[in-house]
Amino acid sequence: MKFPILLTVLPLLATPLAAQKAPDLAPTPPMGWNSWNTFHVNIDAQMIIDMADVMVASGMKQAGYEYLIVDDGWEAMERGADGNLVPDPAKFPDGMKVVADYVHSKGLKFGIHNCAGNKTCNGMPGGRGHEYQDARLYASWGVDYLKYDWCEHGTADARETYKTMSLALAATGRPIVFALCEWGENKPWLWAESIAHLWRTTGDIRDCRTCTGEWDMGWEIILEKQVGLEKYAGPGHWNDPDMLEVGNPGLSLAESRAHFSLWCMLAAPLMAGNDLRKMTPETLAILCNREAIAIDQDPLGKQGYRFANPPGRQTWVKELSGGKWAICYYNSTSEPVEIVATWANFYFMDRSKTYAIRNVWDAKDLGTTADSASVTFKVPPTDVVLLVLTPVK
Ligand code: GAL
Image (cartoon, rainbow, N blue to C red):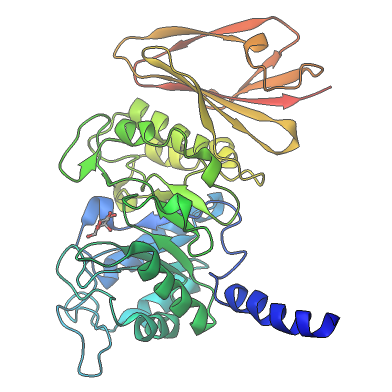
């Protein structure tokens, strides 16, 4: 009697597993650079090649930035006679494979953008109805990462539409990170874990702190929308609060530092979105701060959460591997504030242990939690204090 049961159950078990996203591709949040935030559709092959060079020469690659992603604007306005997508001949005269090959030759990975709807947000051909054909084309170019947008989706069901593309990517046999970009409209955190490696949780980010537009908003507005989503992220499946505006004109240095720190606390994908060729040493120092990046990339894969939110002073905490904790105080006011870190308030820590206190942005060790019951920090306007607490005994 055992055999017939096994024979009925096995195919049922095997089918959905075979149909899932490529496994083990994003054990920690993906890191890289994406063309959209600064360049919109004004991109071309030479610029992507230059960006690859800077990613390596600046030390960003060494710091963990791996994917170079070409966003909307790379396509010609029509598919070819064979139905395949065609790169814009003026911007990418030698096609995309040449660019992908160059990116790979620098030890980086290559990503591309398209849309689950009929057209991209800029009117170029979308993937709807062409999923398997497009996935094969991307694989033949050596694409390692696909960001898949949600413009012109009509009445399409998000879950089914994205699942189709996920299956199409899996069918190519090439491991391709699948990044959903449906702006959180259908709460992808509830259904996309088996389909995608990351999913956008909101509309677009803009290079400001608190501004709002019809489709886009500042990073602090996005931060607010992440509260409560922490339970849906983990190794291989991440909430994506959108790409970084670090170093872009609308942000002060303090705002860039705060934005970056909080994205690290959120275990967010870290996709730089500035012009790498023109970045200041201060911007590079933020993007490449190893200790902040280690918080984001911690192998435990836990997204941080907001622990306290008194007016103007948010406290975010993130559990790290090895019993460590990251703590980020954010002063969202336009005045400096004094923040008192009282260790006894952090009931989540192991009370039987003493922790070494490290101030990440100052790169200073501040003794241990046994030295005094609290430490007071002066936090400048729109800036943060980022601490890592490591158990010592
Ligand atoms: C938006 C997306 C942006 C960018 C843009 C391209 O929908 O959220 O990140 O990809 O489309 O048109």
